[in-house]
Every structure is written in structure tokens, then in C-alpha cells.
Amino acid sequence: MQEQINNLKNEAIALITQAGSANELEELRRTYLGRKGKINEFVKLMAEATGTERAQLGKSINETKQVIVQALTDQAENYRQQTAWLDVTQPGKLPPMGHLHPITQAIEEITRIFEGIGFTRVRYPEIDYDWYVFTALNMPPKHPARDEWETFFIDASSHPSKGELVLTTHTSNGQVREMERVKIPPIRMLNIGKCYRRQQDVTHTAMFHQFEGLVIDSGITIQHLKGTLNYFARKFYGPQAKSRIRPFMFKFTEPSFEVDFSCVHCNGEGCRFCKSGWHEVGGAGMVHPNVLKAGGIDPEKYTGFAFGWGVERVYTLKPGLHLDDIRPLYSTNLEFLEQF
Ligand code: DAH
Image 1 (spheres, rainbow, N blue to C red):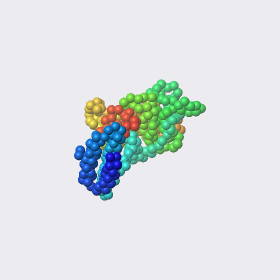
Image 2 (cartoon, rainbow, N blue to C red):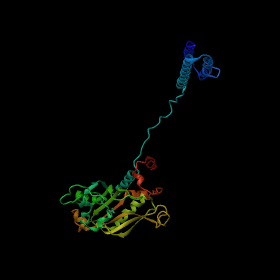
Image 3 (cartoon, protein in one colour):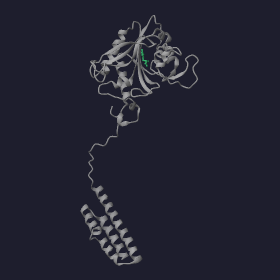
Image 4 (cartoon, rainbow, N blue to C red):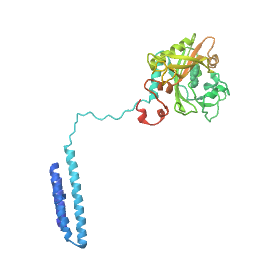
């Protein structure tokens, strides 16, 4: 009987590999594996055998069955591949394309807006001396005003006159650096960079971005500052947007202001989102004479204005972008970032 089983196996494989259609294959499956099929006939015959012979036959029937099942599956797959329809005119699948990070997009937009009125974007160190970050900005060592900037200090030897190295807490470090670079006004600087502070909550991250404007020339007044603020508001938030300034205190400007933009949802009327109709975005003011002097510019001849705002802050106030928590902007959660 063993020989008959072998013959059956060879015959089945020969027929299966020649089968040319799904129907033929189905026919063969029934012939061999069906309830009244050839394999089952052997199973019945096996029942008559005894002892080791029976065990031996059982094993070889099982093996034969498996070989036939495999041959049927292989041939079905061959057949499917040969007959599968391929539309060669279909457009290919494009590889997935990323896009710029939302904050990079905002930085580019802000740059274009200020370039439109003659500002030039510059970059200054993100690790800088205490001198540029505080002292030259009219905040001598140990001055209590410094406490407001929750500073990370670098554990490195300090410079004999420029002091310790810090992670820049604001982009205002670019002010005196720009005065040193240009030397003779006019100056129209836009310094955008990363800033660092010891802070982390829904509206603050330890690393964030600021953009700093600095304009110095003869005859610069608060009117120029106000015009620049309104221009930015309209370009960034839309034609109805307005700005307002409120008195404040910064050591590096006199007078100093806090800057608000009208709420994009209610146009300054007051709504659930803004409450007062306005959103505070950052500081501004007329450059303090001591800061001009620190940058080698004669305050008798020149005046200037400056402002510094958070990129994340101005960006998240855009229409349709009500972000309750800015921290996911700096996570690796692509599903979140791909929305922008
Ligand atoms: N550097 C300030 C801050 O980070 C913001 C600022 C206020 C910048 C007044 C300025 C300015 O240029 O004039 O809080």
C-alpha cells in the first residue's frame, strides 16, 4: 500500500502543477482531499492494517495530504500572479513628503513680513556672555530685574570683562551685538533665535523662540514703533488686527511698554477666548541711552526702538489655531505636527 500512496502523491503533484485554471484546481482538490476523495479511501484501507504497519501508513498518508495541500496553494498563487491585472498607466504611489515644522513656518512668515519694511534677519549666539544678555542692557550684576529671566548658566570659565556664559534668555542679546557690527546707524535688525528659561507648563517650554526688532537712526520716535506694530498685526493676523501699547518697565528701554494685539475672534470686543479683547505678546520700548552707549552709539545723535516677542506666542494666537498646550510642538508626535 505504501507504494500506492507514493504513486498517488506523484500523480497528484503532476496534475496540480499542470492545472491551468482555478476551476481545474478546485476539481483536483475534491478528487484528492474531498470527503469521498482518494486520500480518504486510503484512510479507510489503513483502518484494516494493524500495529506498526498502521502507524507507518497513517504517517505517510498525512504527509501526502500535506504535500497536496501545499501544491494546491502554490499553484493557486502562481495562477493568480500570472493572471493578475496590472494597470501600467496608473500613477505611482508618491513617497510620503514631510513639511516644515510649524514654528519654522512661522519664523519664515515673520521674516518675510519684516523684510518687507527693510529689516534684515540676523543670527546671534544662543550661548552668550552675561554682558550681552544682561549687563550691556542696563542690568548690572546682581540687579533684581534679572530675576525675571529664569536663567540657565553654563558651567565654564568666564570671560574677564564679558562675564559668565548663559543660555540666552531672550533675543535682546542681539541688540548690542548688532550695534557693534553695524557701528554707524541706520540699524534695522530682526534677530530670531532660540531662547532658554527654567520654565515648563502648558504655555511655556524650556526652549522657545523669540524675535527681536531693533531700529536705530536719527529722529526715531514712538510713532515709528507704533506704526511697525500695527503693520505687523495686519500682515500676520489679517487687515482688521490692531496693536496697543501699555506702560511697563524694562531696564533696557525708556519708556517701556507691553504690546497687545487685538483678538482675532472678536476684533477687540472681548470674548470667551481673550476676555479683554486683547492678547499680550511681549515687550517693546525706546532704547535706553545706556544701551546705546554700551553699543558705542551716541545717544545725543541717535534714538531707537526695540521689541521682543515669543514666536510660539504670536503664532498660537492666529485664527483657527487655539492651542491649549504648546508643549506637543516640541514632541516627536508626528500625528500632531502633521496637522499644521
Ligand atoms: N527681552 C524681553 C523679554 O524677553 C522682551 C523685550 C522687551 C524686548 C522690551 C525688547 C524690548 O526689545 O524693548 O521679556
